Image (cartoon, rainbow, N blue to C red; front, side):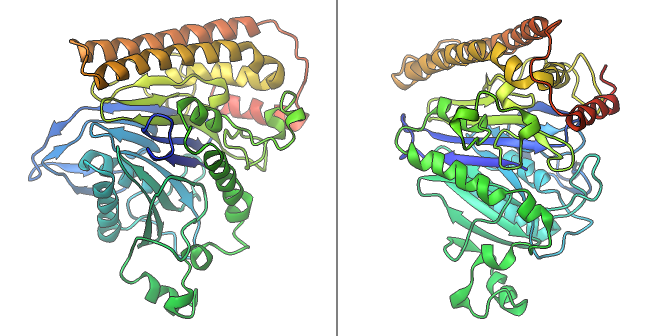
Length: 456
């Protein structure tokens, strides 16, 4: 389960475009941050080895920063040097889920590598969909998991929602704020459409004529598909939409961080005592638990897109409520984050190092998460201030002489400080007695999950 949000410059406090996403995957599915510089290629000799297919390469690919599960070619979210940012969602439709094709995540990465605008990225995904189709196993350990995809694609001035059902697609241009989740959201109003979508809909009996065509109603998987109702995508999409609509005109980076950390607790009086053993699939920051919630938020991202500077805030770690957002700039790449996180514990990896902290917090969530919240707020406030000052300088023409050096230094310092803070928090939790112990089935679930990851 995932959620992706965007606010255009007519809805933000500073005239920026802000795009954000939580990526929800299996608990031991290591999720890494990757940087690839702009590269020249020889299409006559090179192929792109995607997760399941090989496709022709192009002459030049853009520099990109990606947040990606370790086992696939593609990514869950990312951005390129031109300020194009994309997040995707799993959606479940009445159309067949095929065994072969490109993963939706593969198409997203390819679009980021080959597009200078959001519109170009949309057209790239549509072209790939028509040529290769979407298909293949989408899960790490769950080898039955297949799905179709929706996308939220943004750049410095516009954004699109693109939703698919097998080889068919439909797109809506965003007017101000928009969110997507694990559900189809485009109904009868759209801006672009597959040329055969409506005729196919009529042929399959999803509608009787063009006049009553509604993509969401017609193509959403039926009530017997538990992924549709069990994932609560419509409820999460309604929640994130309401948060943005209510703050339209004053949306900023801290607000987006707050939404990505939301557990959607309806009763405010219970928020302090809430813990992940009570979580459901209606959380935005989602936490895995036995039977009902098989995934967790494994990484979070937010792109703050301004003409003078595009700042990409990544956690690179799971559970944003326990993580820190760090500033990344495509033009300067990433610092050394250790080896890519695989499916087993590796104490040298950024993602797995955080999992040791995260899973210790889960033992007594409401007590232990309080240990880090002041530091979390202070850390992000300080780095937001530093980045904001650079943005102001660049906007006024006082751009730093050594721009790349300054930006690289900020990123390196943020990741280093974040690691030190997490070590401090983990140290403070050592020896603490458990005040609020979760239920036995929840504890057993995480003990088994940790054992499977060889985490002791």
